[in-house]
Amino acid sequence: QVQLVESGGGLVQAGGSLRLSCAASGGTFSRYRMVWFRRAPGKEREWVAAINSWGGSTDYAVSVKGRFTISRDNAKNTLYLQMNSLKPEDTAVYFCAARESDFSSENKYWGQGTQVTVSS
Image 1 (cartoon, rainbow, N blue to C red):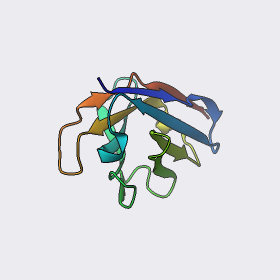
Image 2: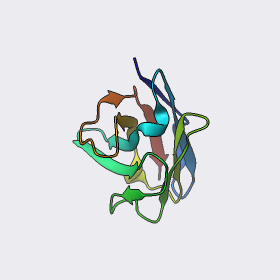
Image 3: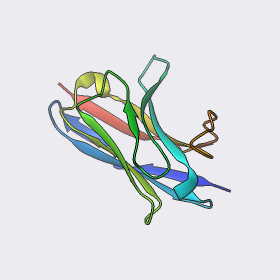
Image 4: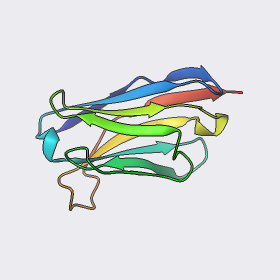
């Protein structure tokens, strides 16, 4: 059973930075395409960023491009999201998800989420 555990959330002032982590266990992390999502209060879940299995290709939502960086360390079975120049509208619960391959469209495994709150 694959488990994903996010950490690194917290309260930060606008303009600040946070780095989220997503630790994976129980599967073959290096095979998974990994994705970050977020859900703000009262809003639908939003895709944030994705990275392929070996880390050579990344994609970002327009709302975070240039401010957020997704990365991974397959030796540590860990996914990261470096968030800079944070804005109040980035306040949300952030989730990581795993797809079983770079060719899969199903977000099969999910973490429990970590809260990020950006104060103005």
